[in-house]
Length: 276
Image (cartoon, rainbow, N blue to C red; front, side):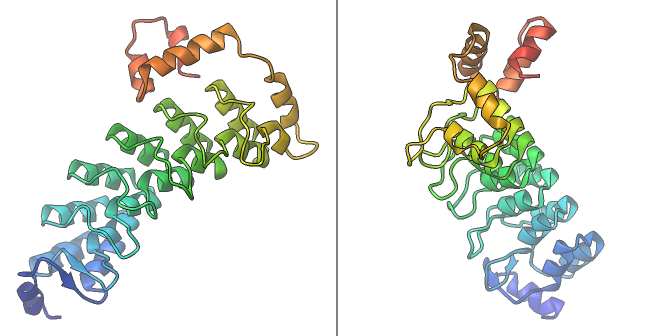
């Protein structure tokens, strides 16, 4: 299209095209080119046959400046592709916390439009802690359970993303909700991840929970793994100190980290409650 043709087509709310110069500028973060194209009349809501918009591409490329100018010129913040991808989902793929923040500030929903493309699961799986933190702060469901994926915590544990697992737990995620009867501790036991196992146990994971095969996490630990000893050490009931910490955290619900920090308590006690 020439710029004049593009300007004429911009009268329509939904425009389908092949890959356009606007998409090209957005995906590569070429802000000056994008400004010029918009100034020439290229529509910001131009979509490909797969419903991919320039905003989708700016977020996938992790370019908040390009996303910002597109939004300022009327880009649809919650546009959905044929694969159910939103700009927010793409921002979680790229791990751009700035793009995630920007989209949420412009009214994007933190929730998935389809179980096939959940932003919070994608961030957890890929280890994008900043994106997770922002989603949780804007009302993203840290316990959102998808049948084929499980919870965000399960995804973080399955992909060995320790920092994401900790952030989810700090944000109030249920330590025992996983995928079906398979708990986060089950998947960690199979992977023999000591760091994640310790983290989950500190947050009250049930070491006696049985999966669909009737097995406890200990029974899934690979032979000769040093993790076996850790499970055996934690077989007994938790200490009174641990029970108190878990109870206090449960009382605070979601966003526990911020609420505990605001308490008038000695710093040492705060650090204990925050698992620091």
